[in-house]
Image (cartoon, rainbow, N blue to C red; front, side, top):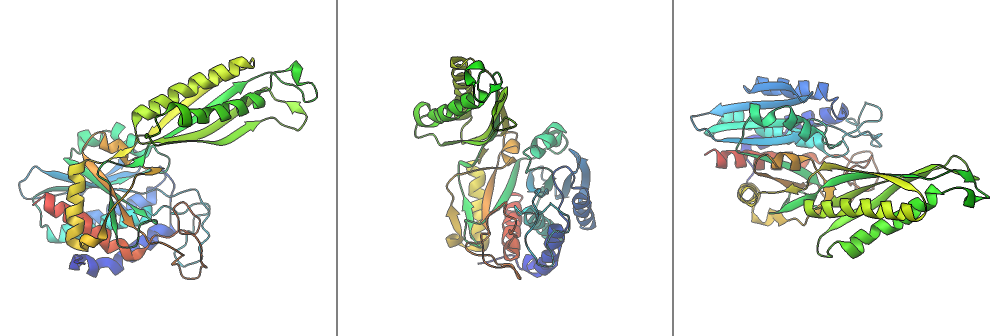
Length: 394
């Protein structure tokens, strides 16, 4: 391992910064204190800082030399509406909010790389740090794009990373194509006609119809979609009725669809409408299908994955660079990649049991109330970010 020495020296200071972010989390589009802290750090280090992009977003630029090349590094800022279960000193003090996905670590790795690059300035061109709001609600990237991010701050490419508990600590995991799935939500409202529970023939039972639709929708995955095209269709919520002996007027089905291809998403959305409409019609009910395309897949540019691989091999060694299979969780970084080339990589947060002081063994998965970012990987991610920038802007 050949970590950047100056980044290693700075790491204790940035562990304190990471834990401060963890202690004071903020949910999407409310990252006001977090954004102010980030902006203040970057100004101290000589960056040209722009705030209030899409509300709370921060963009910071540092130009060295005469090259017109520009590389962007993105980090997400928001936390989740989860009550933290940890009892260590830096546990969240904001009730019902915690950094359960490691965005506190993402911000800190980016800041650590920014500090190093500002001190050394071993590059020719512009390095740009983008701190994005509201990733967890799948809206922040689109909001930044719609607020003129790429018009105001044009860039050649954009790089990001996500910590990943299933990857061993200290390893970098890469995929040269699609690494994370699209995220789509759907709501199907079934309209029937209420009746007494003892006389269902006098009504049209929307809950019965909803159950038939629910069963039929899985046929899209098993009988309509090609078996070689990965996709998940999960019904996660069905609501209907007020009491045990009254047939309701309406029922609602809610769920999620994850795919690695927009063509597959289109196929599922189209057949969902057909199946819901025909099943409802067969029983005398009507439906309204609302298919909500939240974020696209994260499809990496292979050339930029090569850049990450080269940088990671330099600082961590070839044995630390792994190939990552695609995963079904989503990340709205894919929105940015529709506007410029780039790539997202995973950094291993460690496997197995909890590492926190004062907390017993248990899962360390993302979006878990007992989750905490692994501080020991801060210099690894920051070194990879910094080396990517220095290599590209050489």
